[in-house]
Length: 171
Length: 190
Image (cartoon, each protein chain N blue to C red):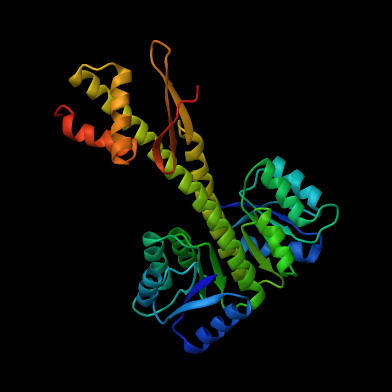
């Protein structure tokens, strides 16, 4: 299940920071599979390259990092790390809502990046696994109306979190 | 958020607590080692834990593992050491964040906010998994109990079900409990 090295997409409009980030990720044993300069490009590359993790700068032309995160996550869930110089409450809230897994605040060090990416990837894998389990369950918490072989209506069973309860006959 | 802080170095602990309070958190517990952190997590039930990795008695990663085993909460570890083996151990233990020391307020605040949000998301999905599993088990138990009653009491399917329902209503216990009792009492051996 776990593929090493992790394939990382980076999106950062400032060339120097982008190059720096690439070098630093590779020294941390991660592989940079794509580099985007805008949010729109990040969405495009996430679609075509199917990275394991995306690191997106918050402020980018065309589409900002949060909006790019939202679109990327909407198409194919993957852990997203937000890169920013501004960790104010408002942008944190926006990023959290968009599903962002963690933050890296500039200026960052090599030792900040590897652990953040690996923790985000591992927890996101758990989230996906749990979601798959829900999807695979043949039974959702619903009201089940049973009918006898003769077709007579039976009381319905409500099967949910609180266990099974009988609800009054629906028809 | 009620936060448990575990850090063996007093100065750093005081600093960390102050930083958390400034960010609007309530530091409800301070531990000086991992074992104490596990105990305080158990007795004070914090919403969130920030644990130093290198601590006496029990390290922060092992403490995280034990805390998560007992009652899952978002855990962020902090450490001056970021070698791969340590990071991998921490990640495997289930922590949501790993911050390299020294860190700034602007590193800690978003790390905690995202840890809490993503933890809650995961917890919600896991609750769903659990409740679906329970519901499935309930349905299986009811089907089986119904079959047993039909066979033993020579009841129609409908009558068997009605008995289970009546027992549930009279006792105020869920159908699953009734069904399991029927199975335990009447199921053929083997």
